[in-house]
Length: 147
Image (cartoon, rainbow, N blue to C red; front, top):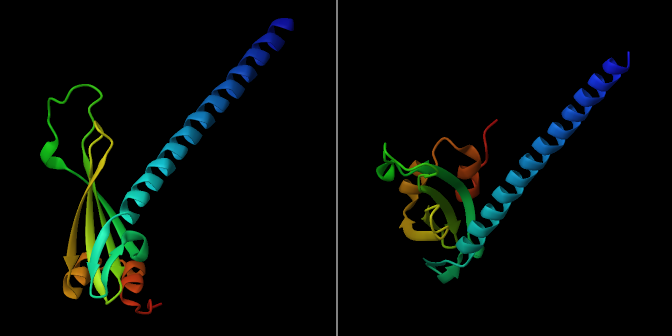
């Protein structure tokens, strides 16, 4: 009878400890993602954009959509262990004027520094880039979302 109690106690301790460890890893990962998102947002806010009303900072624009894509050109089938592919994020933004932009953020995990390339878009290209995303269309063009 005492052996059964010890087995149950050890099993319960293992379950509690493993639950705690998994919860801690998940929380740490979420905080790391939030910290990275905040860092990229701060870098975007510091960029300068030429609008019809003059140059404005990124924090004056409305980011309507952020799209992520892996950079498949840099992928190597013989990548070393621990190698991660660089990735791009495309930040579609609308500003005063109206003016539309795509800011391409290339991040390489080796140097952890975002590299930005800003391009102005005309309205048809912006519409094509965010087509199908009703929320982004409403933010960029102020159009009502159909039910």
